[in-house]
Image (cartoon, rainbow, N blue to C red; front, top):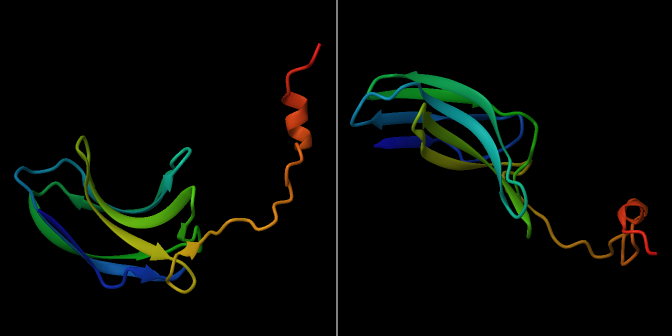
Length: 138
């Protein structure tokens, strides 16, 4: 069992995320860590980055207060094709992720909503770079 308690889940860039992690596992883990990370979801290539790591040791049980300073970017957003979220993840070597608590990092603590572009500049025109790669007609 792993419990992640976060004081505030809607955060601002350059702020601080604080809380407590508790774990009770059946066997001692190898290299247990708490990671601050961001990740994308949606169509296309998904991406993830670990921003900070707090080693939790190799004990089968324990508890620990934590505090991470947040960077200024990227901001959390939700779009039709892709979304970006922040999270705190408890990970053990050779096992992988054991728990995840999602967070929002944005100037007002609310993820940005990406809408459709009302008047795209490409508006049906074939971009110049695309013409270079088009098959040559005989």
